[in-house]
Amino acid sequence: SGMRENLSYEQFGAAVRDLAQTIADDGYQPDVVLSIARGGVFVAGGLAYALDCKNIHLVNVEFYTGVGTTLEMPVMLAPVPNAIDFTDKKVLIADDVADTGKTLKLVRDFCLDAVAEVRSAVIYEKPQSLVKCEYVWKRTDEWINFPWSVLPPVHRSGAAPKENKEAL
Ligand code: 5GP
Picture 1 (cartoon, protein in one colour):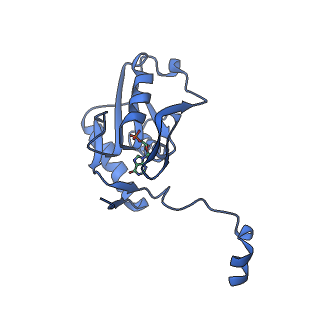
Picture 2: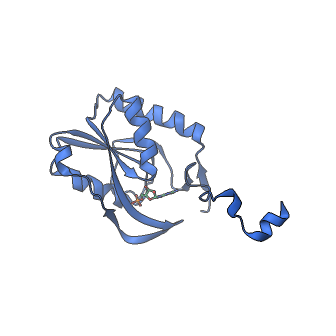
Picture 3: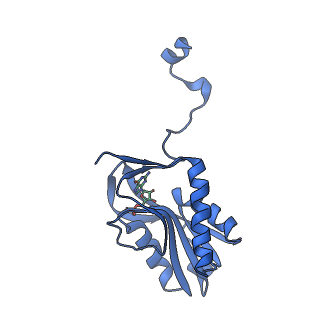
């Protein structure tokens, strides 16, 4: 549709507390929060504090190359976490959004063999997601602008192109 869902850092702060409250009210007390880098790191950090869980792990998954453009399948990048760390643990997978759900499915399947229980928490879930997350803050079918990725990377201030320096 071309419409965007814009999330600010302030809204994110409230969203992650809401999401944690839903998880706590559901009686789920994870032993480990497993974040999917990079967007899921923000969510995992907020949830781990709010749920008083000190054990955070991270998995790197590469899928999106731009707005709506993807690799064929998501891939887990090295270093892959050691499944032994999750043996008999209650794991909460945290990500920013389940879009196709392929990323979450990859990580979920990676966990399923070893863990006692695995559940997933996301800020957003889109209708087409093939993984239905246990915990979702908001559903949308729009492209989401997250506060951490909406702006381009910063560059060293002195390294601006010559034309720009002269304009200052
Ligand atoms: P999936 O595998 O569910 O299609 O995609 C998951 C990952 O793709 C997310 O963790 C996120 O990094 C990226 N992604 C998917 N949809 C969106 C979106 O609407 N906005 C942004 N900024 N990233 C997205």
